[in-house]
Length: 626
Ligand SMILES: *[C@@H]1O[C@H](CO)[C@@H](O)[C@H](O)[C@H]1NC(C)=O
Ligand SMILES: *[C@@H]1O[C@H](CO)[C@@H](O)[C@H](O)[C@H]1NC(C)=O
Ligand SMILES: *[C@@H]1O[C@H](CO)[C@@H](O)[C@H](O)[C@H]1NC(C)=O
Ligand SMILES: *[C@@H]1O[C@H](CO)[C@@H](O)[C@H](O)[C@H]1NC(C)=O
Ligand SMILES: *[C@@H]1O[C@H](CO)[C@@H](O)[C@H](O)[C@H]1NC(C)=O
Ligand SMILES: *[C@@H]1O[C@H](CO)[C@@H](O)[C@H](O)[C@H]1NC(C)=O
Ligand SMILES: *[C@@H]1O[C@H](CO)[C@@H](O)[C@H](O)[C@H]1NC(C)=O
Ligand SMILES: *[C@@H]1O[C@H](CO)[C@@H](O)[C@H](O)[C@H]1NC(C)=O
Ligand SMILES: *[C@@H]1O[C@H](CO)[C@@H](O)[C@H](O)[C@H]1NC(C)=O
Ligand SMILES: *[C@@H]1O[C@H](CO)[C@@H](O)[C@H](O)[C@H]1NC(C)=O
Ligand SMILES: *[C@@H]1O[C@H](CO)[C@@H](O)[C@H](O)[C@H]1NC(C)=O
Ligand SMILES: *[C@@H]1O[C@H](CO)[C@@H](O)[C@H](O)[C@H]1NC(C)=O
Ligand SMILES: [Cu+2]
Image (tube, rainbow, N blue to C red; front, top):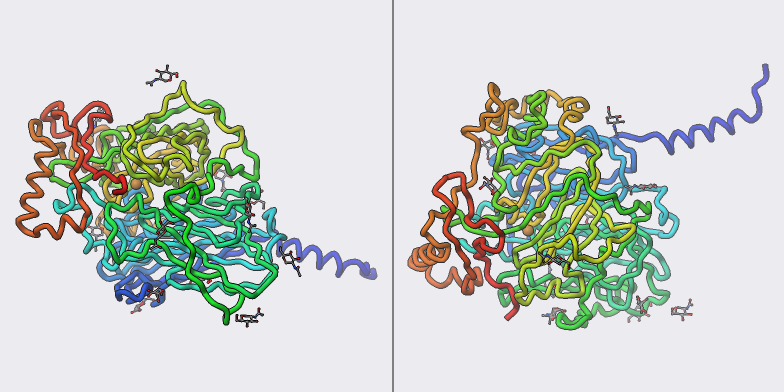
């Protein structure tokens, strides 16, 4: 029988459809090792490189692809692991990356393969998640391209740009958590980088639209960004497509992402500064030589002038960024119904009895368990739904499958905190004070907790993202559905605050985790190599999961009768004796504001004293600008 003349045509269509629909596997081999770099021209330092290179490779995949990263830890002196920020890791929370939560730390000389499927689009990033490591350079963009994106026909070219704070010292040498820093003053960066360098000229064509991905991969500081005489059209935040929204100034906190369309002018006579302004409200002190504002250029004409920016002024309305709470998700997902499970948390900074400055959700400063929490789920049988087995100091919260969860986050600290939830994005339904009010202009107002009977109406289609900033002395309210069984951290993305314990762990639908998760053998092998037990409760007790004796604990609270002021004074007299005033100048310490009640009892389990957040030690220096 003669073949139909149409066959080749249909075969071609079929092949095209297949090509279109078939996900591919994208494999990266990462040999992680130390390399020396000097991206700001001020100091050479060691950073964590991949295959001998830094800046690190951008991971680029298409929606639906399987991503495989074969990682070899060639650092020699550090454990590591890799987190893919914003990835939902459906049925694969064991690929999420945080050490001692969903896997064991990968010791030097060992390999580990991350392998999962990406059913998301947009702008993400990867960074190490063992100890406090990514300020040492192990972080880069991860872009999920999507030819079905509603804006995909509206641009001709694409840019990926990271912003970051930059330190000249290794995290281990900064020694942030120490007796020498009782106020917990965050290390002040030495400089700021634009796409891991400075003084960048982005060469552009006239009358062309670019899709620009901005990512703040910094460890600490948020940044404002604008381009002189140009506007952005926001189309995505943190992997969530938004209705196209025009904005002239963005504020990007640590770990947030914005993707914008940028249309160039039709003339090529001038170049325009791309201006970044550091959120200096976060800095406890500002050294004279620290450059807070930077110009990079949208370069239309390489031979024309590259002017420095004419600054917008901090003190006027000019520096009011676009309020991300008003961005409407393109998928139109409506306000989730009233919560089944409400969690109210208060962020507090305080001292424990070793004189170190810690961070707390209520009275708990996150402390790693002895067994990674996910492995506790897998080994606990029916007890997996009992919060207690995960240990008091991981601040565990067990969620039921598909319940609507609401987190009310009150901030009793006078710094802003960008909170990130793993495994989800969330609706941000309320925030106070809002952007444009006193948000970054804290002038010492009182702590304002959320009042559920006194707030503005929630938006019908709330903004969604995976990192949202809780304002100084204010609060926010977020909602999500517990539809992704797994073990997920919720933590401040200022890496210094994570180190201080500003984290908790959610165990979402533990029975479903047990059913859907098949932990690869390599993970157990890595644990054996790291000497970490893979069964048992948070105290590694496999016999009696309800017996937590021997669990890791936060340090005890200050002894009763000892005031925090006393400790600080004591510490400072010692320090002054050793280091003199130089140190105090270094951390920009002003008179610490301390309110102290007696510890409720001598129980070593008690932590920071005081029953309500208002009474709690507050040793942070006043951040009001002088
Ligand atoms: C990783 O890189 C180091 C140094 O660049 C090299 O010595 C080592 O053989 C590499 N290891 C692997 C597994 O590729
Ligand atoms: C960028 O330009 C500034 C101002 O001219 C200069 O101080 C700085 O060293 C430059 N940075 C680099 C990495 O060359
Ligand atoms: C790696 O992690 C294990 C388990 O926590 C620990 O015992 C070991 O000291 C760590 N190794 C390094 C090099 O930090
Ligand atoms: C996750 O596992 C559940 C239960 O086996 C299954 O219904 C679902 O399709 C899986 N989802 C993905 C994205 O693999
Ligand atoms: C991913 O893109 C598709 C269209 O290509 C869209 O329907 C979907 O909502 C997007 N997913 C997310 C998580 O934004
Ligand atoms: C930013 O740096 C990354 C990594 O080096 C690179 O892939 C990307 O092209 C750079 N972006 C621009 C706009 O040059
Ligand atoms: C930017 O947008 C503002 C209003 O949102 C408008 O007034 C201004 O003219 C726009 N600027 C440019 C360069 O398009
Ligand atoms: C260039 O843009 C300006 C301002 O938007 C407009 O007035 C002018 O007509 C444009 N010229 C051309 C050649 O498109
Ligand atoms: C680029 O700038 C130079 C110097 O200002 C100018 O002479 C030249 O005409 C410009 N070229 C274009 C294509 O606009
Ligand atoms: C940096 O920008 C801020 C805010 O726009 C401004 O107040 C300040 O004067 C600028 N500093 C320098 C050195 O340009
Ligand atoms: C909460 O708001 C209601 C209504 O305005 C008010 O009556 C109540 O006193 C407020 N509660 C607190 C604790 O401020
Ligand atoms: C925190 O406070 C709660 C409620 O008062 C108490 O039950 C718990 O033991 C405290 N936890 C710590 C670690 O102090
Ligand atoms: Cu924080």
